[in-house]
Length: 418
Image 1 (cartoon, helix red, strand yellow):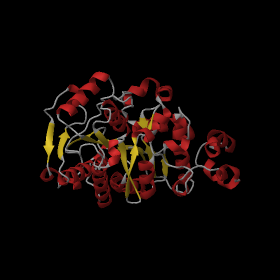
Image 2 (tube, rainbow, N blue to C red; image 1 turned 90 degrees about the horizontal axis):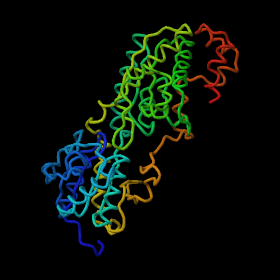
Image 3 (cartoon, one colour; image 1 turned 90 degrees about the vertical axis):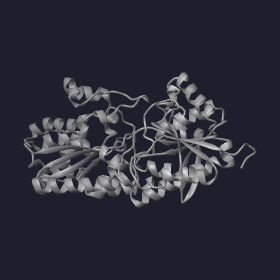
Image 4 (tube, rainbow, N blue to C red; image 1 turned 30 degrees about the horizontal axis):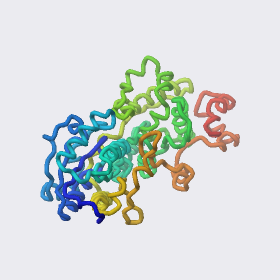
């Protein structure tokens, strides 16, 4: 330990939307802290009540309270998207409460917005309160496990009833969850934001043409059913301007373009799968293709699932690691995001991981140049250059539409070039 006084009282809270494994972190951090003589206080609903200056929803946590919850989904401390860094008055109330309660250390559990919020708490306290942030993500094994089960069931339904399912998977910033679910469930097409690189305002027409290309390619081999998995983050890749162009006055039918306190579109308020399904129908009709499509948003049913063994183990490491960092000399020098690599805890200073321009952690994106992504792509049904350059392949595809070879080339050739 450093020359500073040891940690005596620790506060803990959860921010952002629910994600699997929250209780595992709460449990392990509480147990590790108490076993080292540290009192633990749990703040209900993230920063929601702290920014109001209320202390009535802060309670003492014990080993008896938390020892059993690491195998349960959800969060015994609740959560909220309240942003304490939104204005100075809110932040001042948060810091005042922490100081009045004689908090020595703070553990936050949440996404990139919560990471920035707690880094600002650390900054406003001038380092007098040690801070550790445990990153949560929806892109882990728990939602993949249950998501794959659901999509496999829907794939069998698609085969049995000769229909297509358009499934939108949770995951705002990256396509890991959608890609993992699509790959493990044998989906016929998965589309993620990363495949469009730095492009913004990706046309909704292009997203739909990728699906139509998959539909046509499967029809060319006598398969009239399929499953397409789309990452939720495609909404932000497409953008409000393009969605308004494509959907016009009908956009309001699919939800509202509201933003949360951190400036994010509330993706859960937008029925993206239904929007894509309806737009697909419009683009399929001129091709003479008729089929039944079912839309499905896959998200809320995954967020609070009970952890599978791997995740129960990993979240236990994270909670333990957070307390270990807070008790170390390093925590007297900087606040950090807790990570593990090769079984070893590696705290990453806020200054090294939070982008000063976006004021968020840069998300870990799918590497579309990797062999793992190439493997996923190789099992998808997508239009490729050979489908246009080899006359026999082109003829087979064209036969599934009412287009001429020239019209088909003009209509879909750009997909292969991209």
